[in-house]
Amino acid sequence: MNLPQLLSDYGYLAVFVGALMEGETVLLLAGFAAHQGYLALPGVIAIAFVGGTLGDQIAFFLGRRYGNRLIHRFPRLAAHKPRVDRLIHRHQVPLIMGVRFLYGMRIAGPILIGTSRVEAWRFMVFNMLGAALWAAIISTLGYLFGSTITAVLKDIHGYEKTLLLGVAGVVVLLTAARWLYGRWRG
Image 1 (tube, rainbow, N blue to C red):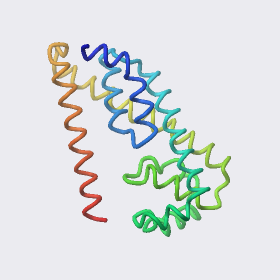
Image 2: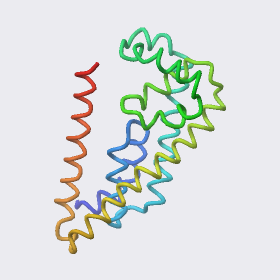
Image 3: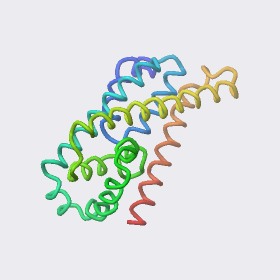
């Protein structure tokens, strides 16, 4: 099985699963794959929107139901609670929409918001708006990256496997560096 076949068979599934969790790496790569013609950009955005919305809704309801137990079980989650509570009190809508853009808060943020007094319908509406922005921005960045690379390398088809693996490697290294830095600071 070759790379184009793998992308066409499992690319959208990977976008959905990735968007349920952190998702930026998968979404950037999916945008790049859309530029290469393996996936359709509107499909990538739509599936990322659904996965991102669903993932954060699940985290919100986990926070609503099991929030205090989760906070006591995970000290790093507890450390963020006072800050998130202050932000919810002052800037509820921007926090709900933007939490997915904050490093380390993609899953923890909705759980912590779920422990607050934010109404479920309110979270759902602004979570959907945030997911739509997130899906469009991140996947379009991946697409534009592909466009830039194409302009630099006139014949990208000869390099596409190497380039896609290189991009994936760089994104994985950057994600690991961010994660290690976060662990070092925490």
